[in-house]
Length: 614
Ligand code: ADP
Ligand code: ADP
Ligand code: MG
Image (cartoon, rainbow, N blue to C red; front, top):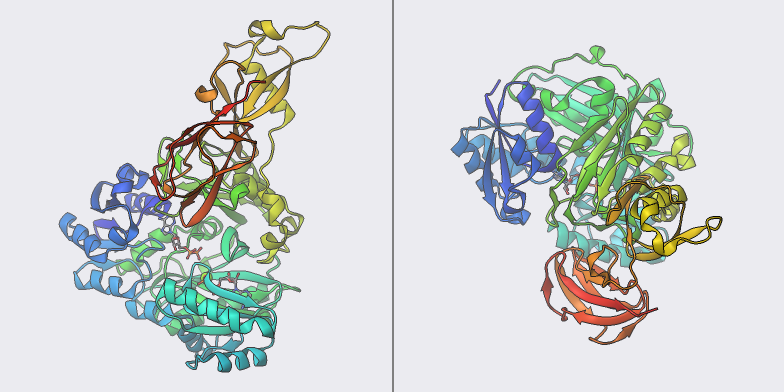
């Protein structure tokens, strides 16, 4: 086994690799960009090397800088994690050419599976059932329309170089085909530098089922059963589980055998995943499950497989890269219980899942027996706008699916993150969806029913009252003391909204300026509302700050203007999305620090609204 390892990644996966390497007595080297100087993976590794400025094109995607860091620190091997350079055959080759062990498959296997059309052809030749469709060279619009008609609508147009759920168009009617093809090709050319597409039959009630495979340098290939990743939002995975609901032994055997055939066809070494699409309109059966693509790396959702098999997949990756045979034979692998993972993101479901950037003043995860949290951040760390805003993968294990589902719900509902917004309450509601609870999930579930899940929950009356009493204990209620028999109430600011809450005088602690309420995975700030004070001091002030770094693209008001609650003040473009900032209450524009075209930093005060006297 090698003695030192460089991890060419960041975030939770870099932290997990460091952990496993340490367990095996391997020295670890992290790499980081300027935005990550204080990141958790840098703190946890034995050594860390700066590789450049924040943008990935200048740091995590620059192979030469990473190889130079490995050579400078004497790292004997490189683990690429997932994303970034993990599926870059040229990088894998360059690592090997530098005399460093590559923890991953042969570059030729990566290339063979790199383009979806070539991969499908290869798989069809190896006897693996592939999604029916057209995957040829001829790309003229008229010809492709003919192929689509032959396949039969609905069809899916896919960029052969696509990934991460991008470069796909669902076409339901023949008359929409030409436009969809043109826009798909435009997106593919811009995002992947390759506008070739393939056409696939769109599988009804699709379920995404994938098989974890593992190969070594001695020609052995095993599988570690399947995962179900059907709960998706815009073709991106939201909740993953293992095993797949409704999978019988015969279907599992046929599916996993096909996955092993697929891996053997490309002499696969290391951890890989064969993704299949299944017709979920009835019971699962092997003749209604087709190969979709292979991911030649560790997958984000590897923990659910680890939790049901007891295998640390990163440990296997390191052993296999060092030339050891796969530690277990197929007949020594079995499924124990059920595991479920949710991707906890710094994003705001109520605002179209806009990334929520900033410092994690509060970061707590709910606990459950057998629970696991893979995270790359800590309380006090920053969620930066430069990378994937994933906060953590929250993973639960249970004897059966129901137990895993309940435990995951508890872990998410018990999480408390502030002031950064998260999708925790969205995930809690997704877990409670009757279809998901029954295991009859298909990839369209969130598209159909997701709007209700994205609605921000309100704090319970009980939690509100408790917080209000903590803010305004009996002793502080002089101005509110009424007839003892009558109810008292006072005004507060709940995340900037003026609300009236009944008080029962139960609070007996020293009053605080503001209180955080955390419930259902959501956090709200409650503060005292003072008629006289300028509201600047409290969270729910009229201060409109930039939620993230960006560019002001329009200003709709002028200093001194009277505005009404909800009125549009300005538009900010950040993280490729437009974001409208509105007046929190009726008032006057007392301060205006924004001009169209200006670049603004996160938390910059853009506008301040002064409330009209009541
Ligand atoms: P999966 O099929 O496993 O969901 P994806 O292709 O969605 O895989 O995941 C890879 C993506 O993960 C990359 O495109 C990138 O956006 C993101 N990513 C890469 N590295 C990290 C990291 N260290 N932490 C969080 N996200 C990452
Ligand atoms: P990517 O490289 O972006 O991960 P995939 O080919 O793996 O692309 O497809 C991503 C997702 O799109 C799948 O998980 C599934 O939800 C959906 N999908 C792909 N192919 C089909 C199909 N033929 N029918 C229905 N849904 C599909
Ligand atoms: Mg995929």
